[in-house]
Image (cartoon, rainbow, N blue to C red; front, top):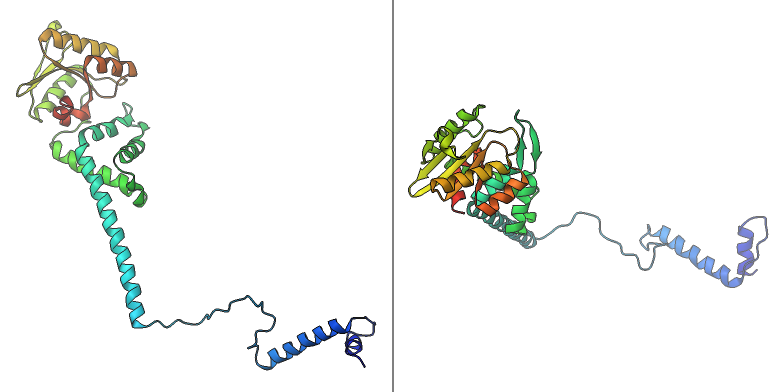
Length: 284
């Protein structure tokens, strides 16, 4: 009896016709399967010829290899730590270098209404603008770390500049009392001040002097932004008094047109929280 006929009988009662060649191939496959089952599957029957078998058990490494792995990890850790320290140090150095302008810009980025509620807060955007200006590597630090370094550095520098008894938020409501408050606050930072009285002040509310520097100041205790008129008045009043420097100090901010006029006339626009830095702002 031929091999093909034997295999036909095995499939069942129905008669199926297969070639001797195919029957031989099927017999070889069945033989390999029996061999695989006989040796516990060691021959890996049915596996793809290109398949790779990996040992899944525990890996035993030599002490020398373990030491090398530890040394490599330590090198990576030290390299990252050194890089982090360098980036953090460069940020702190840049804050110290640009402290006056940076702190001023950050203060300008936060606007509160007359009740102390936040109207606008763009401090994070200003900090990122500063960081992008000094270094592209700050992104390598974890999220929030670079901004925290900037704010902490500014707060430390603020504590050095401002005396403990100065509070930029303690200004009075009344306009005349506000002038006296400005004069008293500037004295805390080494300025001699004189509050002008009467109709002959020509738009100058007080004069501050330190050494050979004198500046004519108009004080504006406003709940809204200060416009062009204050800039024009203090500029003209300073010229009339023979004082080369002039400034407007307010509690809130200035209109865009006032900022443009101040730039062309040289009038310095300040808020009350700029008082500790008046020296630096004048000589920028």
